[in-house]
Length: 195
Image 1: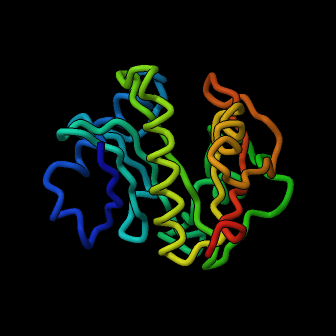
Image 2: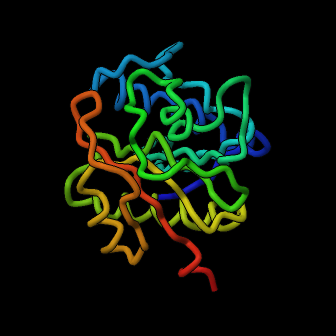
């Protein structure tokens, strides 16, 4: 099992990994969860998949097992910034505006984590190992990018997994019902882990 952080600068070195990750996102979010998202050629994408973002993939023998997208909170493309902030600003009709108790930050040391997934064909006995690899690479990549904080909207029970991995993960908004799942915005403090 490998973990790779992809960017527009290095994705050409990793063959089909980036499109395979977008296909795995399609299978997860459109195929399994029936979310109404943009798609083309069996790949899921949205307005936040820009050259400013990074994508972390956990993969084995060309098969993507898990992934996550990191986007700087300072990013801006037209009217869009990052998903949590845009929801709070009322630009996304599928996510409630009151998803955070405070105003979503815009700062170079804060990045957003989104489109987190583990494919359904990962066996339960490997699931924790895959999740740990994904979280580990996400933390390492965010630190290299200068982040001391990562914001993310995750399933309601995920903060327990974060605590098991030693990550300082705290809710910063209410638990919400979104498209059939209970989710919460969390603040992952990386500053306590920087050495």
